Image (cartoon, rainbow, N blue to C red; front, side):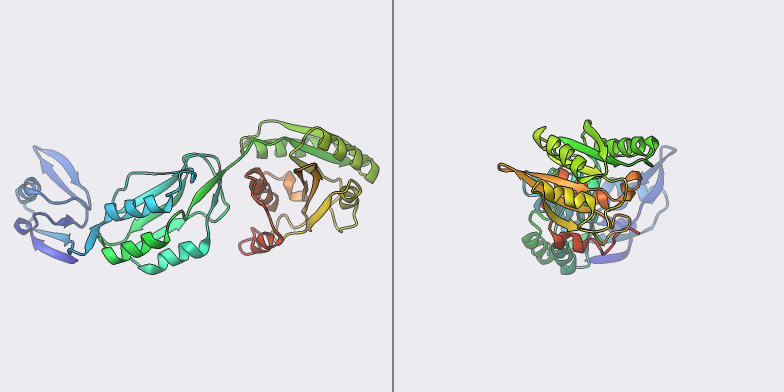
Length: 330
């Protein structure tokens, strides 16, 4: 690629390197960066006494920036089930936008490999499993120079297929069980319910069934069994005291109804004291989440990270949770 200063009369067919303001018929015009200079523009620049221009000219083995980023974008979301749309490229940039509310899913190592092919293409994205809203930009593909070598472009295309996708939030039957004791204040219960309702509403779930019971194994078992019989998909339990041990009241209650404890604790703060469990009803797996105290807060915390994945029908393993420690809020 040629890049440098040329005489204006020699700039025909070249790429303007930066925006220039000129006057035509006493009106100010802005000629944008990246514009291909034609005969009319040459005459316009000369009439404005612009005798030299900084321009670029592509070599035969290079692809124009907007074409290149659009080709990469199409490959990155090749699947029709990606739930991502491509915005029109401009100034060597192509943004990817979510079509739905959900979470973004991709393999960081794949993105690293794409970005490692050449410094002439940079792809930036949200973090994996971030919550996204419909019409939100989730990734951006940027060409750094005005042209990309064809060999680099082909190498990127070869490894970038289906890099990004959005998992949409699914409608779920959510039950919230709050346990109480003689010192429990009704205001705390009301706040927990309202915050949980808002949290779910932001994920497209407008209804939540609330239950209250004493902080005792027998009472909790009754409410759990009732929720299971009412076809709950996810049961949230907010205890009057934090779950501190696998033999605490809430985990014991889950085991009493033949539920399976999957995980107690996560390397995310706030959110450390979370409990994950499930119980089978015929062929259906019902998720149970023992909520950490921070779930009373509207601020993003570890509970959100678990909830978002559950609402997208994404299986969560202990290994997945262990990975959450890097960048684990604080």
